Image (cartoon, rainbow, N blue to C red; front, side, top):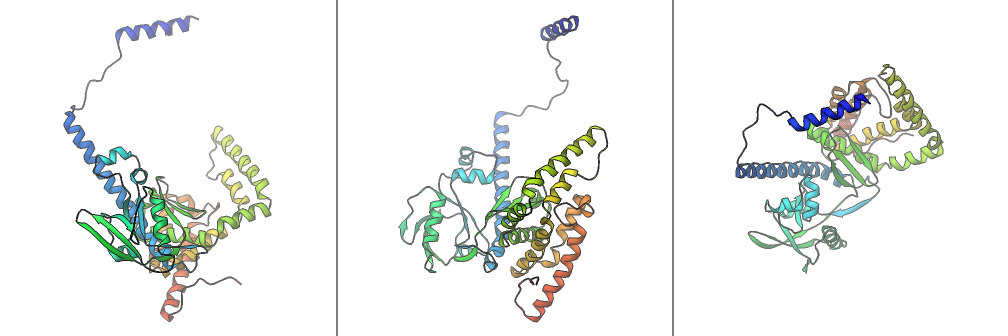
Length: 366
């Protein structure tokens, strides 16, 4: 009781005497200077995020186009990313549509990016253009998805689609013949993890990977994820989980392992191994096989796209530097030394085929 009274009286005393202030402060900028600095930083952020996304789309295009013969699902594309103001803000991330308007970005359907090497780029479409008509029909929609549908509809007969485009220099008409590409949506995640993943018909690349890896590494990881999608590993994994009974015992193994991990942590016995992840690995016994297969088929996909297969294994050396445990701890993925050594052998296999002028298709296991 006395303790509570003392605390109460101390609170009253502090309230009366005032809080302790700082002894040093940064100079206060003028309102105009602050607004200018904020505007400059936002403009820099917009340009940076657009450049990162452009890099992502440009690296993905040759993989999606040249490997259409391998992918189970394909679509026709002219290679352009469209966005209205709200979607533009989502793609940039962290800024509202209203803030983008203050930087001169109009409330319209924008050609957010024309992908390098795509039919749209070769036809002369630019990021400064606005599409006003498709095959002579004026665009009467404010939805990017509907405009994409109109463009695809215009290419159904394997004929060039006619686009009327407008920019500050005037209006012109372009003819674009769409290409057959893997039906895969490429997305950028804000995660800082050195990783990427594939799910459904979507490939997601983390910003952390884009920051840390060069173009060759990023493109190989994208090829790896594309291989997962082309080989339907997610669907096969679901079947294996059900057929093996792992759908029942997997959660038990993982939860039991998590309890052991937590117990060891409480008693100060931190193990370098995670029992939860070991339980998950036992339940997903097929995961390592699928990962190794995606490494192999992804390398072929990269080679078919004229990517640098010599630099593919470097991404696993990067992973090893950032996560040394990956060189000896085996969970759902093969060890990084195994992946590097196996890829080096596969590179020689592909190079031998290239020297003989053979088609680049991965060897099948009999």
